[in-house]
Image (cartoon, rainbow, N blue to C red; front, top):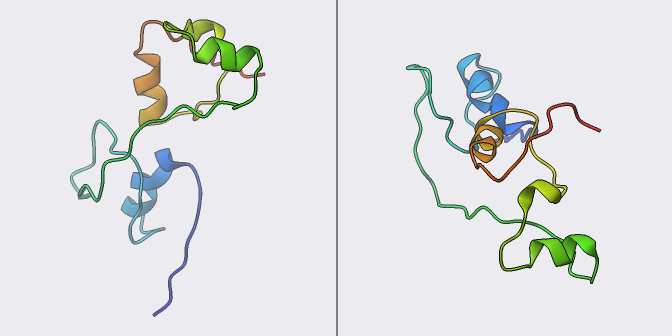
Length: 99
């Protein structure tokens, strides 16, 4: 048996399976799926925020009782379900212009 592992943007997973570029994929479930794609949950994964453990401005901002998310810089996927879900949170401002 041979397994070929490819990494990439999770938002492309359904398209790659549908076009037969990949036999299967592991990604978060998109809001809609083509009828030619099946989805099965293999586990629940918590969404976590990764922040520095050392005292700094970001640490202080993140670990306050009510963080002001619009003032905290963080990395998001360029597109896909995670990006869309984060953008729905009223207190998060998504800058689509990049650095």
